[in-house]
Length: 255
Image (cartoon, rainbow, N blue to C red; front, side, top):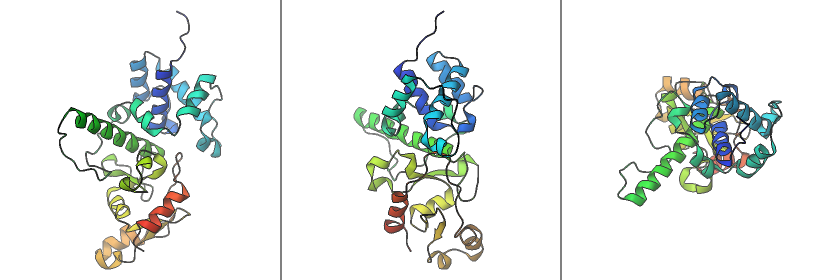
């Protein structure tokens, strides 16, 4: 049987998966790679190779000295140039997050959207699209931080949240952008969301002064005082942009 060229649909699905798993897990044994390969009738090795090809085009990885294999095709480059950063489109091509992660995602809304049953077919479709986008955002952000809280290094999926830096309601165009995300544990996520902690332009944790009076001393010392001024673990890909952090400091943080 002759060699079969990759279709645009297959490349988009693979690019979406590229965003959803850490660089170190882009191999043929990864269950997400196996699942995608099965769905598009490719071998896991072929999908893994294509993921590494996309890695060779990723400026975030090149900045870290990671260059992939450098075997990307013209089609790979065209898909990368056209669709990298097109988060709404990539979310539509993404595999179900349960196929990407072996742990069940939490059901809470990370966007402030009320949780209720849709009232009709149009709203049902919209709700499905929102859910798909939320799950894609969460999976990409957690993958960028290698599944660990960027402040505490907690690696229990059920305790992790994909936090928006610029709040969901403030910037629709940033809702699915992983550069607008941080991987935080549930407590620091709640504090960040409410402006009780923030990050400096050097990625150092800032703590609102009001917390000292409101939080029991032992908890304040362990969860806030100890991390104040500490530099977070910055993501390997999709690093937050300075203007997003500035927005949070000036518009959300309760200094």
